Length: 96
Image (cartoon, rainbow, N blue to C red; front, side, top):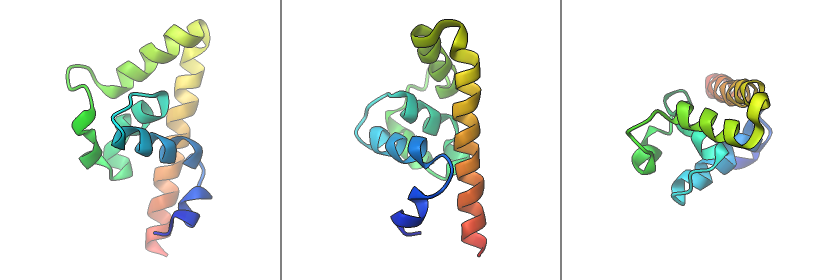
């Protein structure tokens, strides 16, 4: 799928930078979000840099909590929702 099409999908602002961060070995919020949804996104091969001791979703929440405190829960849900929308839209484009 051309990168231009992926840029237009909902959630691309999280997923595409997250994939680049994973490829570079950086554990950013975007990278953690992509790691948490790796199977849905079809990027499980990028998880070699992931910390296997604790799930990425847990690390994402802890990171958000340290930065946002009480607002972490709503931001966590919003991020994962955007990532799920990206995965669904990407799968729909494959079918067309």
